[in-house]
Image 1: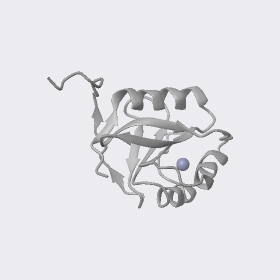
Image 2 (image 1 turned 180 degrees about the vertical axis):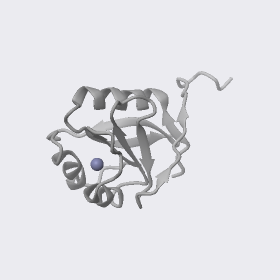
Image 3 (image 1 turned 180 degrees about the horizontal axis):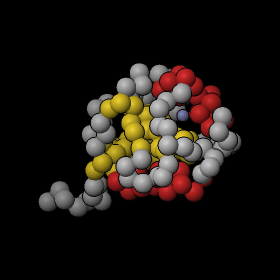
Image 4 (image 1 turned 135 degrees about the vertical axis):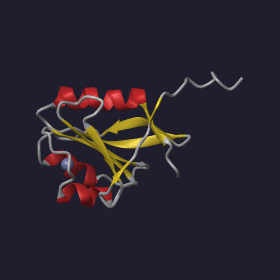
Length: 131
Ligand code: ZN
């Protein structure tokens, strides 16, 4: 599945949740519709703590997802070893959000941990724009 980008509303939601959860970590799975990431699946029972969010995600059974998202309650958005293990397991788009949780403070990585471009798209509601 070729991903065109992430919906702006979805990204804003991610940034808001990350900010709300800070200083605890937040994690979820990314799901797409028509090649655009529009959904964040917050995992039930995810214990938010600095060490647990990513590991809990890693333990999840196979849920269809194009990637993952989690926050780092710091300025460092580099993936940890645990992050890289998770990346290699689920999808090819992995967002790490860091402080101060604004539109610039996130990075997308591929499954190998390489920084990739993920366009932010203004998605129109279905039924509009097709005429
Ligand atoms: Zn991490």
